[in-house]
Image 1: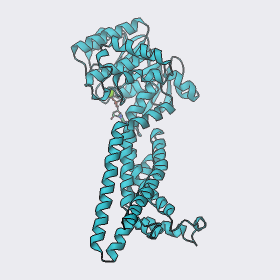
Image 2: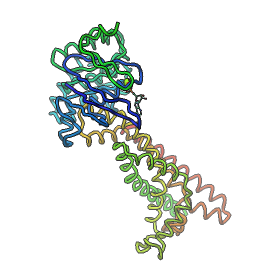
Image 3: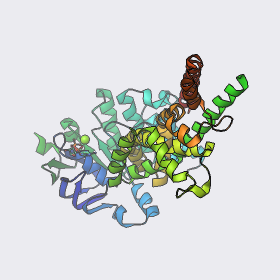
Length: 224
Length: 212
Ligand SMILES: Nc1ncnc2c1ncn2[C@@H]1O[C@H](COP(=O)(O)OP(=O)(O)O)[C@@H](O)[C@H]1O
Ligand SMILES: [Mg+2]
């Protein structure tokens, strides 16, 4: 669960996000708004990547910016943000998926087991030894998802996850999201994909004019 | 003759290599810290660096000469007219170039690799490490260009080194000497060797960079 309380943020001088209050709770929250409205910025703030200019971000109740460095990392580990254009490291797909596990210093055999597991779930086992950076956008998306799932985060923030997926990929993603929700993961999805939002969401955040309007209840009602 | 030539080539490589190591060891960490901290000084440093890329080598040579000469403030080191002083001068000369080139490489990795690493649970230290390892091939190119500038420059080597035979004579100062003596053919040959050596280094570094 992630809460933003009175959050404002500026890249340069002018606020891009202004006094936003919202709750990314259990189930799926859709974040909707035109290009450049601040969806990505909002998610990066929620992930503890950006520091709010004013206000606070609470990740499972704790503000990562008000605690010592070591605690900050362990707070951040409860949430994973996936970039709109997934970022691949130079190694193989398996290396990429294992990265989050390696930095947590998990035992080598567990790293292997968990990596295989999520590669299987996302149907990219056959790509395990390919170079990640040469994959197609859709395949990278799956690798990024696998990398995130491997560390079993309690909160998952997806930035336009369907932008590069075909219909089949989209179906898989929806199933995956439903499954994660059943397991109690809080998911936020910034998306243009109204169907996705309609089918999945428990609440909607409309982002416009630097601020966010927070609406509890199925997304569909608000979109048609 | 051949012995002397080999000496000069090896000395050039060593001095410029030393200069490159020095410039890298301070240029890249500074750039990295300012980039990761999103510091306001990053922009300022970059403006200064981009300006200093154009500094004439003789000017750096002259400034350091005044610093290191017997009566200068750092004269007590007694390093004027030694290979060390050339390496130091060239290191200062190529620092702006290395900063300027690595800044853009690191900026890119900051917004993607660093963010991704932090988000998947890296400590800030682990994120720094992956930022460097991921940009290694490109950083290597920045460093290589620094080396190539160092090995090809004349002003610093001439003023700080003094072109002393067997001690501070490097390829560029040797060329300058032959030109001044009117030995154009020898000067051209030396020039050809300089370019060939630089080309070899470039190719080797590229091959190494690919396997990193
Ligand atoms: N790194 C950045 N530096 C400066 N401005 C930025 C940066 N990233 C985004 N912005 C600006 O912030 C605003 C919100 O961007 P973003 O959060 O990416 O919107 P969205 O994801 O909804 O398209 C835009 O006006 C964009 O130009
Ligand atoms: Mg965006």
